[in-house]
Every structure is written in structure tokens, then in C-alpha cells.
Image (tube, rainbow over all chains, first blue to last red; front, side, top):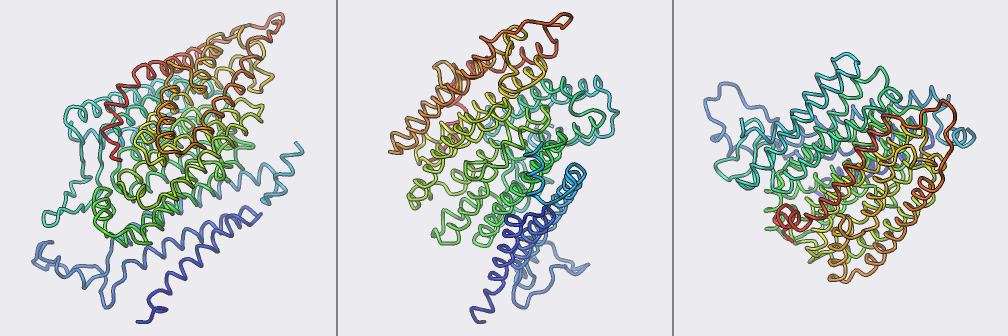
Length: 129
Length: 494
């Protein structure tokens, strides 16, 4: 496998991460900031999911009624992709959803309070009041 | 039952929060229910500490996922309580109880009928703090960090008005910080294949310190710097803490950034034992320089404010610099001083934000010109203010003196003189900040108008509570030698 093939996913991860970070920091519109933040978090999820991959490995579901205990299956570990990063990301996705939910609720309150979601206009209104 | 103490300390406030959200919004019922549960939590944390003192470090495997008998690697999530974790757990429980009682008188004004939801988040936050303190799993720490942040976002947004925008900024910065931490954990996982901190430390010690580890450390540290609100990354903090309801800031301000400091300590001292000071000397210079700059910047920011709550919030930014610098001095006295300062600063910040409540209740405002006549109306509040100010300036029998002295010894021994200068200048800055407030409060009396009652009962109570907390700083100071020897030195491995 060439360097590009084996490392391209990391390049993709970093590019996505930077797009998200740029959006979260540089955008003036609060909703766009939030979208940037979501991209940022998704990039990390993608990165974690890619960690678990192995060449030629199967999904980590053990056949039912195998007749072996867990320890006897352990030598076959290379036949299955690593499920731990995927399971971790289930939790991270939940955290991400909760963050976006809270942020959207807060944006809604900001809109009700100032009538706009453009940060510069909000700051202007705060400075004038 | 007693084997389950560690998990109970986390689960108790969590379940309390769930039940609280179902209860009616009755102030007296809530006060009773909340304080009973927090007293119980204090009991559990104290029992945990006693157990750790008598039996040494406790390890608890969640759901019985014991270590693999073949290679002794961890399979599930572990909780670990060493002697400092036990102490910190007691501190969290105590701050939560005092903060809860101090906040009761502000509920009517700032929280209203949404009280059950507010308190549900309050208890969730306490549970997350306990989890941050006791977890021994790098990913579980991320989850606890995010739970504490999410609960804090909700609690701050209860402030309404300006608090919404401050909350949004906090959400953006907090999420970026936690995500950086998560990337760092990912790099460590790739290199070691484990998330358990003890196993990670063993694995790191046995491998060459490759670029991936350095990068992982950079991500972890940057993420935590955001959570700690060290100077250039601080801008979310003052507004968020100022516009939050008083009942929120009294819990969040003393503990939130301090637990990020504790996490930083775990990373430097538990994960990368001894690896950093040897191979990354230039880093420690850069970080200590950043910390010194942060101390001065935080103090100057604080000097420029006129709102009491904002003055104290900016001081938190400066205090984060003290602890960050201490941890990175690559000297054991620096680390000990930083951890002792963590304890001292949590109590001092609690006292400061109780003073804010007392001022608000006694004179009806918290601007610098509002505190005029405070001494007539609530002498205990002024007493608390004086006691805390001595602590922050570093007058001898206070805890602040001993933590600063230890930090200074470490800084001089390791040759970080810019840190020494920053510490001393910050003490001078604190002197100006506090005497400006005390001068107005003491020397500018007001003439009470006809029919106006001079004393507000809530203000008196909050003032008394603040004075008691401030006085405890001197107790901590007087027993500083014992605290450092018993609770802090055994866990510092540097």
C-alpha cells in the first residue's frame, strides 16, 4: 500500500478538522459557527472510526452458539476489526448531539432576545443598551 | 456496601438530580431535599477518604469488568481513589453543600418556577465533578469533562439576557477544548491500545517518546488550557461567570477550572511520569512563561472592572496561571504548591462568590459604587472580604501565603524567575483590587432613608456564611504542613 493510500484518511481528518475550526472561530453568524463546530466534532469521530480498521478483517460480531469461551476466541482477534473506538464514538456522538441541542436552544433564546443571530449586530445592540 | 463507596460518591448526586427534576417547585422542600442529599454526599466522601487513609489507594472496576487474567490489562472502566482524590472528593462535596445553601436566597429572584430543572443540573454537575476527580480512564474523563460542561452551559443560561451570548461563546470554546483533549486521547490509544491511565502510563514509560506522543501531549494540554481559561484562551470565562445566576457561579467558579487543573496534573504526573521535564525542557519554559503572562493579564483585567462579580471572575483567570505555572516548573515543590493552591483557591473563590450574593442581598447591586455603606448593613460581609483579600494577597497565617510560598520556592529552585516576578506583582495587584472595594464599603457610609430597613436577613446570613468560609482559609493555612505532607506529597511522583 502506498503512503498516500495508507495516510490519506489522516489528511482528510486534518482538513475536515481545520474547516470546522475555521467555521467555529471565524464565522460571524452563530448558526454557521455551530455548523463549524459540528464539522469539527465529526472529523474527530471519523478519525476514531478509522483507527479500528484492519485489512481483510470482518465486522466484530461473534457467531452465536460458538461453543467457545471468550478467552479461546482471543487468538482470532486479527480477523475482526477493533470495535472499541467505534463504541467510544457512540458516546462521543451522544455528547455531540447534546452539545448541538443545547447550542441551538441558546441560539433560539439569543434570537428572541436580540432579533438576530449575527454576532456583530448583537454586540452592537449590547453596546448601545 | 463499603466496596461501592467510590461509585456511590458519583451515583448519589446523579440520582438525586434525576429525582429532583420530578419534584414540585417548592422552595422549602427543595432546600430540605437538596441539603439532606448533599449532607449525605459529604458523609460518603468523608467515608471514602477515611477508607483511603486506612487502606491505601482504592481501585473499583465498573460493572465487574475485572482485569484480563492473561495479561493483566484493563478491560472496563476503572475508578481510582488515591489519597488526594479522596481529599478532593470531600472538597467538592463540601463546596457543593455550602454553595447550595448560599444560593438558596437568590432562587426567587433569578431562577423562579424552573427551580427543579435548575437543581437537577446542579446535582448533575456535582456528579460530573466527582467523576472527573475519581475516574481512571482517559475516555471516561472526556465524558465527565463534557457532562460537567453541558450542565454548566445550562446552569449559566438560566441567567437570561446577556448570559445567552456568554453561554454560546462558552459552548464553542468548551467544545473545542474537550475535542482537542479527545484527539490527544485518540493518539495515545493508537500508540498504546489502552485507555486506562495506569496501563497508559506503563506503556508510555516502556516506549520511545515518539512524535505521536509529543503531539498527543500537545493536544491534551491545549485542550485543558482552554478549559482552565489561561490568559489568551480565557475570554469566554469572565462574561459566562458574571452573567450566570449567583446560585450557579457559587458552584461553578470554585470548582470548574480547578478540576481542569487537576486533570492537567493527572496528565503530567500520572501519564507522562518524569518524561516531560527531561525531554521537553523548552516546553516547560514556554508554558511557565504563558502562565506568568496569564497571571499578570488576569490581574490587570480584574483591575479594570467595576462589577464585583466580574472582578472576581477575572481573578479566576489569574489564579489558573498560578496553578499552571506551578505544575510546569518541573520541580516537586511547584507541583505540591499548585495542588495546595488548588484547594486554597477553591475555598477562596467560594468565599468571594458568597460575598457577591451577600452584597447583592444587602445593598441590591454589585457595582463598585453600590457597595457604599456595606459595612453598616452587613459587617460580616466586609469581614469576609477582608479575610479573603488577605488570603489572595498572601498575608501569613492564611492558606494563600503557604501556597504562594511553596510555589515561589519551587520557582526559585528551578530558575523560573519570571514566574516569581509575576506572583509578587499579582499580590500587589490583589492588594489594590481589594482595598479599592473595602475602601468604598467601609469609609463611604450612607444615611438610611425613612422606613427603609437597614438590615436584610438574607444578606446577613450570606455574609455570615462567607465569613465562615473565609475563616476556614486560615484553618487550612495553619494546617498547611499536615495537608501537604498527608494528602499531597504521597501522590506527587516527580
